[in-house]
Image (tube, rainbow over all chains, first blue to last red; front, top):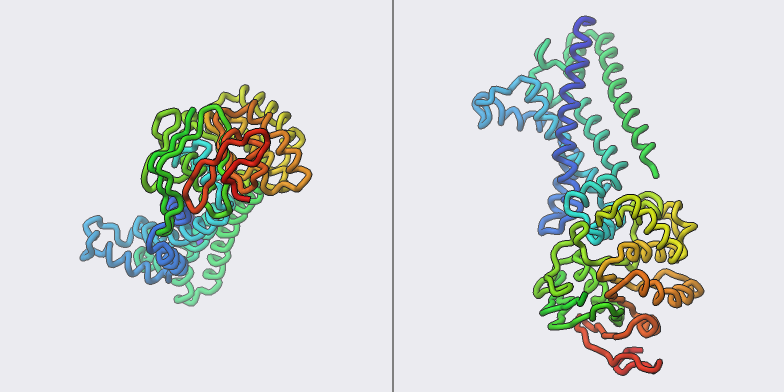
Length: 214
Length: 227
């Protein structure tokens, strides 16, 4: 187990880190647009996003599996049971969280702020960047929520990654395997490592967040 | 620069908020638009500032159709009824306004110091803008609009949120400040004494329609002004 620990830790951070970064890159602008736009069905969409914030990972895993399986529409990409498939599934889990938290953070800003920036002559991109700066505490919260959700989930990683030793086994799936084998001590150690990674990431982000306070 | 409204209509939530077939705010003068709350005064300024787009019609500034505000080419400066600020100090907020208009750093600093002294906010420059009192915030918001020295300055209820004593002072100072920093100015208010004190011409906005009132002469109340 010891020899395998570090590769598993590295893989866990890589898969969940990439998924989180991609979820923030896609989800933060979407959350901004959701908060700023007025269109028919917006409330329904927000309700869907908020529901998506609690998506059962195993259901997401199943949906992504159906897409990526050999017989699925994206089967030709040959991604099933790879780290890329795990990133894809965790991305789907993370996006609604990032969208929801970002939209809430942007909506919490003074209502006239975007209008002020437009009146001062800021174009759409500049306005978005300045709003992001104003909502940075919320955006960091979105990052923390996203990373926390994807690094700890097991259902999607197991379903689309397959928990293959030396290839797609991550901390969460390894814990399930060890527990099934009755290796409770080893499972507890991995559980501790997983908590430690989640804590370390959140500690760094919280320090950044608190420094960002005006 | 003249501000011309041509066939201007603005509809919000299926309600006709503004319907102004034709109106002109003359170049280099201060025009007041007087009207009750909900008459569409703020919407009118937001349209001229390019924050909102008209449903129909056109706004021309200096003869040119108004485009979306963009950087140094933005012809207007808007002082909001409830001033909003980004995080940071008052100086940072004024600096951001000038930066968005493409003013170089050294000039920004001297212009901020100058307008702050004139508007009486020099002691507030290093305070967090979001923690100012109502009157302080109003002055800081006004200074942010004036520092831009825009061809068209738009003031939305410039004395709202200011206590009685402060209101008297600011009302006395405003004509001098506008003469110094503003050219064409449109000020909207629901207070007739403000309109009379600040503007050379007054029009009345009621239920989305604008009509001219007689210009004030010899301190007498112009005809057609609501009490």
